[in-house]
Length: 160
Image (cartoon, rainbow, N blue to C red):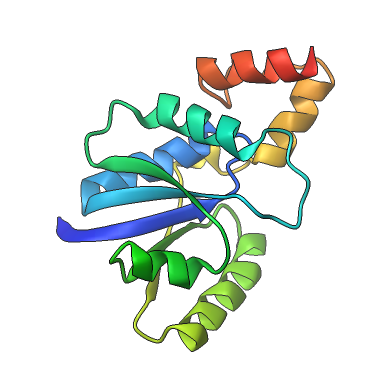
């Protein structure tokens, strides 16, 4: 185990089983995982930042070395305030790589001491995205396989 803190950032709108798979993997590799929920994002969110914080806490509450935090502004600045030099990003498909590669390069330019780690979720989660989950839920589809019970209930409450 690497006894350092790693930051796993995202909008988590909503948190999925793919996200929690990566959180569990990271928790087994690193001393502390901070799931950093972006308060400001260019894409519209279904859930408020407070709701996303609550859902992430509910889903990860049983993992001792995981904490949930909100962040605004630059991720590298947030990482520094947390005393972390490590950022975790998930790669589901080759199509994710170009964007993630660009982000990692920019973060390195902004903060040369910060490193980005990439993890792939279990194969059964590679096709899951928050956007797809929201679309399925909006259209009345079954999202049991993709999200935890707390998230399913929150989606039902939001979308009717």
